[in-house]
Image (cartoon, rainbow, N blue to C red; front, side):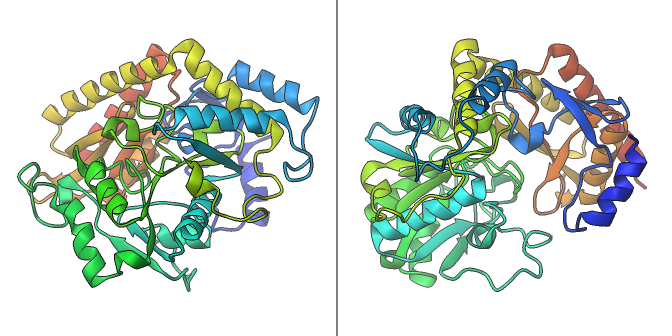
Length: 435
């Protein structure tokens, strides 16, 4: 089977709107390596877009999937319940931030979890308004797409969008929308929420504020210390549900099980997905018991939500984290990658900013450090050269000028060293070619 023949078949039957990072077709994967149909091996700094924190085909996850699939693949939890769903709910209620009684709803994807979290918040408050942020990405279904900030190519031509959604600036210190500098700004970007109620939507009409603790597609932006605490306090003062979208940041991606732990905040509702299933599709909405119980029986669910095979995979993922102390591994990985990026920045003026939490790190590429002009075309060329040289990596950000790392946490030292070398060579090559 050749790549060219598969490409021909793909172009014949798959819509052009389904984009691809490169032309390779994966045949197998293990740990932090992907092998294509022609036998070429790639080091993976993408991890299925943050899905493979425990690595591709982790043997414990594979074993759990096989064992569960041999006993029970599907009944629909609404028809005949099964223990893995309940067991996973128990684990997630214990793991998510917040020392208060919680309940958990299982679903299929991050976007589906976002939509249900908003439904729950609206029911609990009797309000309709939703506040989200610039640079946000919350999914591709109608409400989740409306909440997503970037227009092209996520929203172009797909309107009209869902009503009662309001967007305010995010805490993007490198490109502060208020023209301020931290810490002298005294978190003016967070206090702006109170002003937002006066000019955009009354607090009495707002059901929830939904935010990523570290933006994913928006450019791996990390707000300054105290930002989320300030937002959460304002929400609590006005009876607004505070929702943390941890679809990409959760399950150890930032060195803690959930990124909000590092901000010292317990959201009313936490959303998780991606790496929760170790490659299997599953998501969860976990929140305060009284909020989660607001919808009437039958108001939440879906045919495949919390499928027993996916639940078994998720339980195996959580076991791996606990047994192998994968959070400590994640923190060490983040320290090494950040140190490497910092050393590069001292030599490479194209690196305008380094940011992230733990191993969820990024470098923002610029054409000039003084003007901070985004180097979007150059970032695209860096990604392409990395792929040609055997490294899968992605760009992100509104201008496409941010290179992000989402390598599996189980990546070996040799694989990490090789992957970073490929990335450095690509940066040197692309920026040395600039006029």
